[in-house]
Length: 419
Image (cartoon, rainbow, N blue to C red; front, side, top):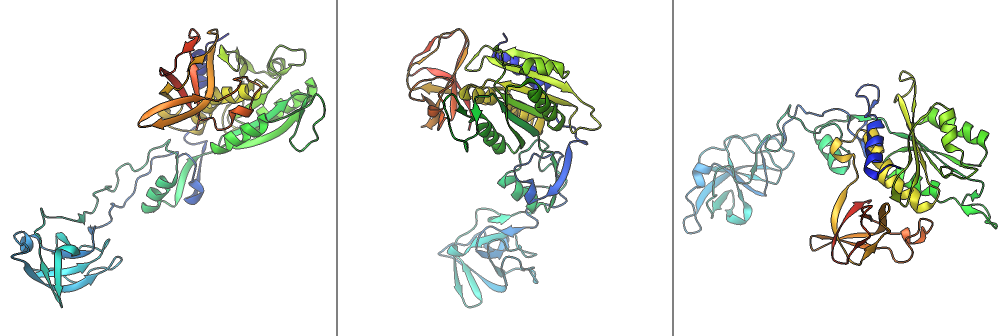
């Protein structure tokens, strides 16, 4: 049985970072939302595009107004009005000013903006009542935020609303992104039914496939649901063969324990898969099968398909997915290396946390930031791998190391952030 760290290292080494040629596509700007940038982005434009005003006020020459005050105001002639989007037509000379609005282009000759609250206007003349502290006051200088040709966004960047704004500003309307990771999902077991079916004695509603599909959707993954596969070796073999031929990664739940109807591991071997993990010293989630299949890289987006056989118990399936599958998908998707692994924080436990100390134990609950300090509160009720009811509202998993049997209330604990 492998430790959690050993299993994590194995799966991250198996996961192949996308190829910068084969696994890239170019999409329209808005279609890039939620995708991962596949190539560096630069722009031929400076930003700001030109010197512009940060205030509503008057564009002036600093030399004209550097010694003025309310007692000794400087009078200037207004020669032009410059709203945003207007190209100035005149040059500001000695003793002159231009009325300017926020975002307006600074006219030739002017080098400073006086905010309107520090002026008094009389007809076509303006009286400057306060001396600016320095030249360029309230002037956004061309290229102050970004110089053309410099790196703008790096590969591995997740393109969310701020990045869309940057790309739009740079007039990058076609964006190179990595292809979406394609994940096939199915649940196995004769006891399972879908939520739409009538529940009868001995049956269980399949929640795993729905939970995992939702989790993958949040990650921008192209999920393919294969449904519920019965405990029939031939049917399972056909389903797994189809899944590994169509997907970059396959997730199944159930069928990976040691029961008479747990066929998954043997089927993987029969189909040519190399099994790297059979069980992990984690609670919940000990029975965990991880395999890899080599494929023809000329015909597939990626040359290897990874298989995760997760436990059937709902909490075990999600814990294993959060801990092992999510980091792998991040790498397969092309995220920057600093974002692959699980995200842990140190939090203060609100109550005592217990485990038997035999395996690395994950306690689910709520992670909150209070006055700058992370705090963890475990879910009330039974911490049982089959009890998914108190899994609702979970935002973190507190980790008790294999040798740790108790973490007292008020002590720090490592917590895996999951949302």
